[in-house]
Image (tube, rainbow, N blue to C red; front, side, top):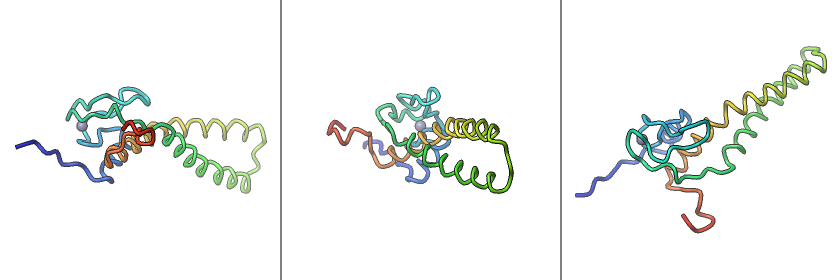
Amino acid sequence: MPIVRRRASKQSAIARGLKRRCPACGHGRAFAGYLRQVDDCANCGEHLGHIRADDFPPYLTIFLVGHLIVPTLLLVEQNYQWPVSVHMVVWPALTLVLALIFLPLLKGGVLGYMWSIGMTGREVQGRG
Ligand SMILES: [Zn+2]
């Protein structure tokens, strides 16, 4: 009788991915570096290296960080009189830091989602 692995739900796969963990087991690391995925989970052996998220994580990062920075900038601008030089330092630096924080987390979430629906990222080219 073949071994049938129970697939995690989309929600738990995304949550595990957001924690940069394997979407299948939630214990093994999904990333070997900042953005480089492992080929296989060290814990459960699930193959993850073939999943290509491509531009979606950066898109989500830009969307999220933009929606955090712009309202905050406008709120600060309306309520405080910061010198322009302070604005020119604070907002680009905060944008960069937030983007660097969110990008690997969102890539993990996208990886988890793609894994949960059996998507590899090569479907459009027909090689998947
Ligand atoms: Zn695993």
